[in-house]
Length: 396
Image 1 (cartoon, helix red, strand yellow):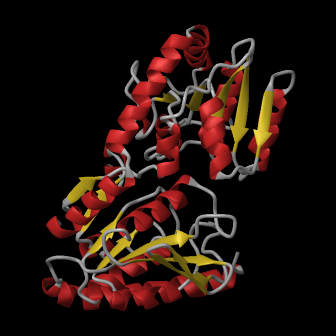
Image 2 (tube, one colour):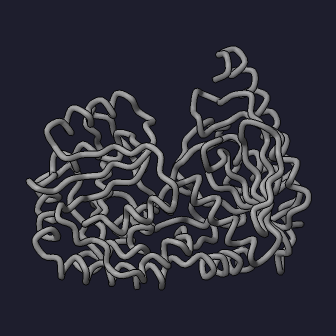
């Protein structure tokens, strides 16, 4: 985190730069190049992985860029511990170091190096909206006469002055869900394009069912943060059913509460899991539960707790049914009564009843798992999503 006085200086500097870029963009909007994009630059504030952040938003940004790279030359520019260029198949990743964060927000890094990649791209696509590097990239892209797009992943950081018209520099909005669309600038061309699921997860869904165990276990995957509602899941656990909680701890106080609730229950906390281990864990679970909330156990309020829910997509692809709370964009993924269940948030009783229903009825669990896999194949395969994204670039 930057020292307070430097944060103030850098924020003022960014605002001056943003205002200057906006003035240039205002004179060049009519020069935006249309037609077939030949290359794309994707901007993500934080690198996905051990050197950055292991979260759904970061994984999704990486997935979008990786999938598009199979269609047109694509660069993902992001921040990390050191300056480096990484080749990941067809995708080029440019990592720029950041000396600190603005406002103490880990997903709002201070970095101007990302702007260096703008010149070589026909399209600029940012994977956050309310953070400094994305807003600068949108303004700079428009100033260079490039179509600019945004897919919001829910991060909230530094806001520029209201007089800096970032939204007027966007060519279009590509939202993860209808719920996500509510939080993005209106009046712009828009498409709803969900994140996809890696082929390894989809392939796992064709394997023989692995969910019949002597002891049934439910699964949670995600960052251990209070808006995830893991406390509701632990309170909902029926007798004879265990739980695996897979995720990094980002909120020690909440984690302490979870450990208290887990006493005398069959609960395992797993803080590091590879994709291969995740697939095996999904396949062995009775059901995957994402019980996120608008109001957490400490009384905190969350307006955008889940814009979509990529964990649900991974579980469905792996052939395991899902239960989610009626929060954010998650009900847009789960076909209630077919691929899983949607339950009220902050309601351990309703959640526990649905878990018990699946535990008592292996045939129902198997049928829902098959339906979940088929829906994931149809809706969440990355190649199809990349083609939709490219079509949106052309049309918007």
